[in-house]
Amino acid sequence: MIKCNIGLARKFIKDDAYFKARKKVDAAFEQLKTKSGPGSEWLGWRDILAGPNDAELEQVSALGSEIRKNADVFIVCGIGGSYLGAKAVIDALSSHFGSKGPEIIYAGHHIGGKYLEELLQYLKTPKDDGSSKNIYLNVISKSGSTLETALAFRMLRELLEDLYDEDASEHIICTTGKEGGVLNKVIKEKGYRKFVVPENVGGRFSVLTPVGLLPISVAGIDIRTLFYGAVSAYNKYDEDAEELLEYAALRNAIHESGKTIDVFATFEPELSSMGGWIQQLLGESEGKEGKGIFPAVATFSTDLHSLGQFIQQGKRSLMETFIIVDKPFSKLAVNELKEDDDKLNYLAGKSFHEINTKAREGTIEAHSEGDVPIVKVQMTALNAESIGQLIYFFELMTGIFVYSLGINPFNQPGVEDYKKAMYRLLGK
Image 1: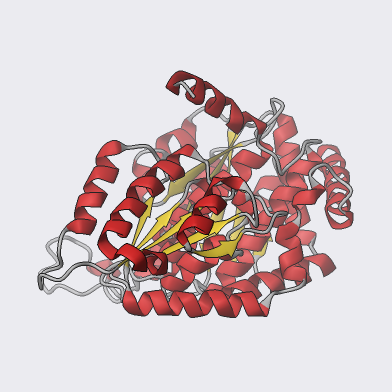
Image 2: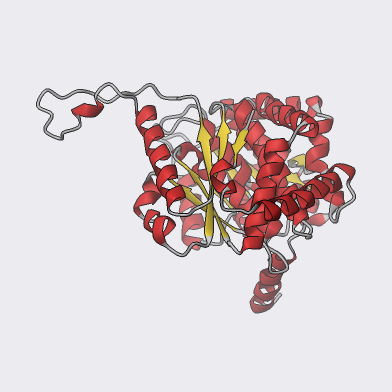
């Protein structure tokens, strides 16, 4: 199960400020559990864990296996919560190089013409043996009208319909709302296969629905283990959420103290995309009414050579949350060179995990001494079960923390502002 240690950050907050924040957090958790807070109609991400739909898990897993077996390329077409969660899990649990199964490509997450043009050309280019690529497309959009995704889907489905004619309906899967919206009209006309996004689950909380589960399954990851990892966290935290509540209270107190940035850092490059998912989850949830802590993302030790100086000695406006994996998942050790011309033989025999751990511990020590409040969120291992637990940990913490600020965690009114201006400028 996920462990959370706020000890290094707690010293920056006076007792009276922390206890005041804790009262707010306890009340927020009660709001969440009793569905009495604003936006409570969007708490389906808890409901799906309280009553798992094993039939749907099996259906998604079966289609994922079918696609994995047949496809050369699988395209995930979506933006925000429609792809970030899936990408986070896939990047965390897949091989870096030469992984089996289809190549997974993301589209519809921006409006870059060069990227889409090159993607269309790549899809049309034959494989080395001269045969055509076998392509599957999963478009994910609750409304079906999100411009970035809708534009990419328009171009991609035309390509697939040209390639497969009447069989295109076997290669295009839509994940959308139960009814209404542009995409459902297209599904009805074309006969595309469909999965439903629960009406009471918002995009950034949707990774454990077919939105994230189908791409994750295509990647060869056991979605049942992932899902039930989250179920175990749901059950645990409804019984005892003390460490999670301490973290939410600390963030509330730090928010009230005037700090404006939380750097979500990891020393595991496999978790870089998980940082991107957390960034959206918190950013869209807490950034309203002039409130919130800006969620930044850093992958160390790489970013210590770009952001490290600022974190160590810059304006004291930030805190850090380190996401840590306890068990090693690589046995690679440093070799010994007879000539020792690089003077690294003092590390010979040490595993890269051990070296990386010492780098992390040294960084935490230095940043803490540099007056950065630090929280440690620890996973037991890098596997599907622990990732499922981590997902629910941050979903629950987000809901509780944002309620403690006195705002609705589940809407995003500011997102609509750019859309209105964009559509006006485009002449809609």
